[in-house]
Length: 410
Image (cartoon, rainbow, N blue to C red; front, side):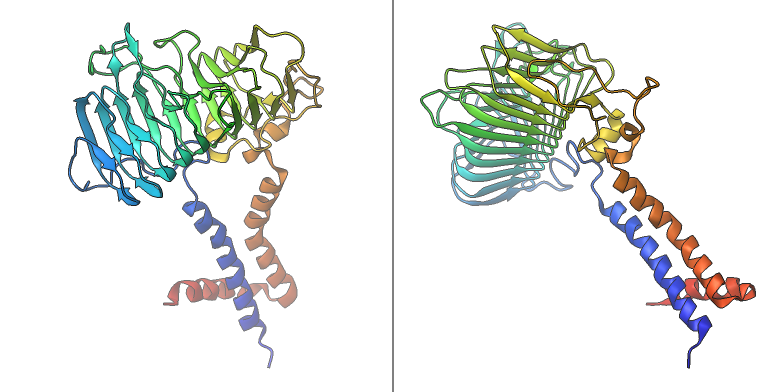
């Protein structure tokens, strides 16, 4: 026999449960889409407590180790084996490189690398965070800072390297809070966040950089300091990244065999130069560039002539924190494709105001519509019950039973 009260009690329970699902899902999401989004460095109890160097000659997983070089003048971690995972380690205090990789199929994940300081501020010497000649290397969810060379550089000797993926990392520098090695407090170490070297006689090296944050690369130890210094015989893609407080965000330099670079869905804030194009680099494709507050020159050319790049869908950047939280996919205000070598103005509507879409989370109408539907579901369920049953007096009783069912189940 059909029992309206029991039926609509189940309906109300189902609606309320479905409303909780998005909340649970959102709670499980990472804190940020761009940059590190999980804890980096050692876990609570490093094992062993501390070691000066780590030499990896065998395949396997190495994790939760504190490597403190105590200003040793050499690589603190050397990965010479294939099929290695280095996870949740802290590497610090070196007068040379943090990690040197020469193996294949290597993953460096959730590591913190810092205070790799060679020479002094006035006598710059390279000490990189991660370097070497790897093949099939993934650097994921790592933080690298306070290095006197580059956070990541392949390959210093221009040997063969290939297939490097960098994702959800944070690379930064700034004035040292305390004196370290031969650097004084307040001095800002560093060259570039990422630097590439690949001789024309080597096979073209491939680099993918995505979902990463770069800041502070400026006023350092070299001229034309940049977040990304991409040059020579490479094919690089940069996607969904955020840049702020840099002298140069993209320094792109050509070669005889052409340096191939593609940039999509990236945002820039408070930086002097977005793109510095040098040495006849060509075939550059930029899509969805988002310009935020405090940006100086968007394009600077050195030793360039003719058309060299294609820039489409440039627009305004969303607020900085929102960009980190939701990413840059379609976040910039759209506009019509522009001709090569032209610099489009940010898009505005007829009143001169920013388009509403640029304020939306992730820039998507579908996201807003989905959130609205979820928020309206309880009210739709209540209205459905009231209309179908015609008994408003038992409304509170039915809703109370639904809550009781939901919280009394084991």
